Length: 195
Image: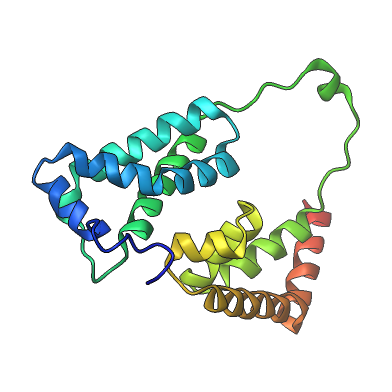
């Protein structure tokens, strides 16, 4: 029995989803009991604000309730499906947040401007990845997910997550150090000089 498998006398997650699709609220409560802790942990990592996390996790379970009949066990486990629903809700919350206002001291503080060439090259290196690699890199390095969290989010084994991230970073390194990258860097610099 796997660590996530329920005891023999309890229904599986898939059976609970079927019961939810039939309108049984107790099934929703049981799925919440089993998986809410994981969703709260992911939400805290992304949103940092308890009230927002609680609202988003509640929304995720309500979305699962409404769409339980659409669940396809051949595409993902119930846990992965719930994590995916919650992750989309967390991302929506981040997109909907207003930009934080800067304090007057922050406006006056001198800051070093980022090198536009470095930023352009890094963006092109990420864009050179295939969609699956790009998703892993963005979640790991821009969103701060750990390897185990990425495995849960994507439904991939942790070893696969690690090897795909290594391959993606190597591909980016080759893109950044190859002759084309050096030419792009020169072009960006020369373009800036003529601007």
